[in-house]
Length: 435
Image 1 (cartoon, helix red, strand yellow):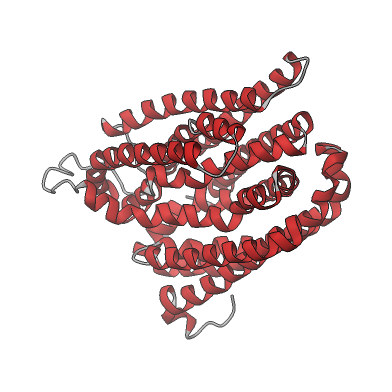
Image 2 (spheres, rainbow, N blue to C red):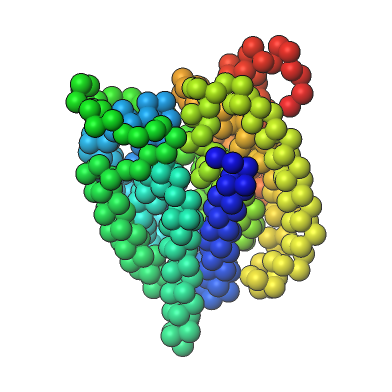
C-alpha cells in the first residue's frame, strides 16, 4: 500500500472513530444532564461492568484471527468453523455468570435490573469485534469505519429522541432497554457477516489469490486448540479494561453512584482522546504488524521506532489540549453538576502521552509467540491497579481513582519497553539505544 493510500485509509478510520467517539461523548453528556450524577453513576457502573466482561464472551477470537491470517494467509480459514462454535460456548457462559452476579451480587434492585437488561449489550460487543476483524483482514476501511460509527450514531439519536419524547425525563430502565435493542440489531447484522465468512466469502488482502485446495490437506483445529490460541487475546482485553475502567465500578461500590458519575465524565473525555492511537494500531496497523513480524523484519522494527516518537508527540499535544479546553468544556457539555470532574480529568490527562506510546510498544508484543507474555504484563498491571484503587479511593475518592489509573498506565509502559527490547528486538536493541 502506498503512503497516499495509507493516509487515506487511516483518515477514513480516524474519521469514523472520531464521529463515533463524538456520538458516544454527546450521548453520555445528554445522559449526564438528563439523569443527574447519582442515576448516571449507577448506569455508568452497570455498563462498565458489562463492558469489562465483554472480552470474555468471544475470549480473544477476533484478535487471534488477525494473528492467524497474518502468519498463515489463506490457510487460516481452517480455524473458522470451531472458532465460531467456541464463541457460542464462551458467550453463553458469560451470560450465565452475568445473570448470577445480577441476582446474587452485593447491590440493590435497581442495579440488578440494570445488569439484567444491559447484559444484552454483550451481544452487540461480540458482533462489533468479530465483524471488525473480518473487515480489517479484507482492508475494507470505509466499511470498517461505517461499522464502528453506526451503532454510536443510532444510540445518540434514540437517546436524544427519548429525552424529547418523555416530558417527565428519562429513566434508567428506558435507557437500558434502548441500549439493549440496538445491541440486538447489531448482533443480527453481525451474524449475517459471520455466516458469509463461514461460507467462504472472505476477500483476504496481502496474501495473494486464494488457492482452492487450501484446507483440503489439513486437519481442522479443535475447539481446544482454538481456546489455546485465543485465550491470551481475551484476557488481554479484560486486563486492559481493569486498569482503565474498573475505577468506575469500584467507585460505585466504595464511594457511591455520585462519585462514579463524576469520574465517568472524566473517563468519557479520555476515551475520546484515546480513539486516535486505537484507530492507528487496532484498526489499521495491527494486521500489517502481524505480517511484517513474520515476513518483513526490517520494516517491522522501523515502524516500531518511528511510532514511538510520533505517538509521544501526539500524546503530549493531546495532554495540552485537555488542560486548555477542559475548564470550560466540561461544564458546557455536561453541566454545572459535574465541575468536580475537572480535577480527575486534569490528572488523567497526564496518562495521554503514556498511553499513546504504550499503544505502539504494546503492538509488537501481540506478534508471534509474545502474546502470552504480554498478557502476564497486563495481568500484573491490572492487579496493581486494583490494589491502588482499593487503597486510594477510600481516602481520596475520584482523585485517588485518577491517580491509580495514571500510575497503572506508567507501569505498563515501562514493562512494555522492557519486554520489547529484551524479547522482540533483542538483536536490534544491542545497536540502537533510542526509542
